[in-house]
Length: 599
Image (tube, rainbow, N blue to C red; front, side, top):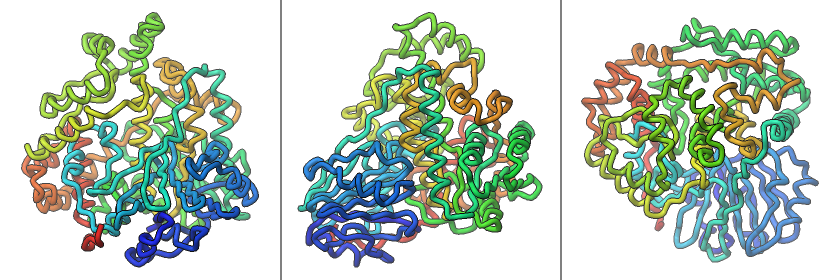
């Protein structure tokens, strides 16, 4: 388990290292007091000093020591601790110490996050919420657990809450500034770019950013060290394989997993891609040799600071890791995040209604034909003029209303509780939604930009937990690098989300690098039948998990309808079912919390 804690430059914080098991001193303030403690591999941390200034880069950074030193010397402060974050590619936490003032930040996507708490009157930060919970003895927040019973993803700002009381998340794109006396405030350092570029204008920037992201991973490898890359057959991961090959990966080892779902045509596309990568070592895991989903149910998971949906596919990924280990692969490129940054939510139709009604008419017809939207509901969605706060407030009263399939043209999907949620859980979620409606602002003024950022934050948390769960090989996610994110979001949503082409932005950006036949793919495979097969094969163990439900012990679910959903799953509640099983498994293996240490 890798983690770090950021300490203020004050006497009170000097006792923190003794309170956390396994904490090593990583760096000190200029005063000599501890600044960074934790357990981070040497290859994923760089600490530089320039006078009284300290710069720590924790993560994947291709910068040389000289380059990073020049960046450290450009710190402007200490009051605002202004820092040229756009000058640092890759994906990393940045932590600064200047004359006793501290700044800590993650990434704009939320893949790297920062959490904060108060310990003995001073602010302490970390990259994992559970580490701060260990320090303070914080208890789980039942209201947060109740939100996991929603049938859709959590709305902003509930999606960045911590599972523990008194442990707060720093919003993605914000930095935590800590004064020498331990007080803290937030500083917004990142804003999404205005989506004003055409596809032709934006594609070169995406090509450059994605190339730099992949090149950075290749360059951090040692001489002759192999690089793993997901060759699923999907467009996002396939593109990374060709970029890695282009930038000279000494040994490229690709991984293809063949699922049992008969509708999944990924392997066919992976086979076609492999023909153009003759020098790569290809690993293919055939469906007959794969464990079923949920096969890892009875083994203790890695410790994550929130429930991970990786539970269902953990056994398959363990097999992948074992195969990689045979080839000495320690870094794996994955295409996760591509869907979220390359495509635009259909809610761009609502945003463009006044400016270009003819375009909205044409695109509406295309989306409606593809997704089979009912005309009346589509028109209702286009006519909806509610603010974000009003939408949240309205959804508060509909948590147990029938879930009607509506075109995704609003601020988010309908917020509904799972059938097994108790009145206590519904009341808890309603309270949080009402609280948010009074103060929450959307992530962007336009619905499509808000939805795009929300999807990115939600997916980043999923993949963040995946990386906590899978220690080896390290999973690199270039699509969620800040530079790639910005380049994609700068392209107009009607061109990213056109109904007439599949991921046109990626196709335009990598034209000439990825074979045209592969860029012209129009399908996206699923794994639904593999999921249901896993439920059937491991039904007894899953029922045992429900019978010992900790959510039921907390009064948040009725296990009877949950058992019924497990025995006869339906598409309407399948996401909520997967969430519930992940939460129950996480709670069952959650390490006990120590007594509070005078928080």
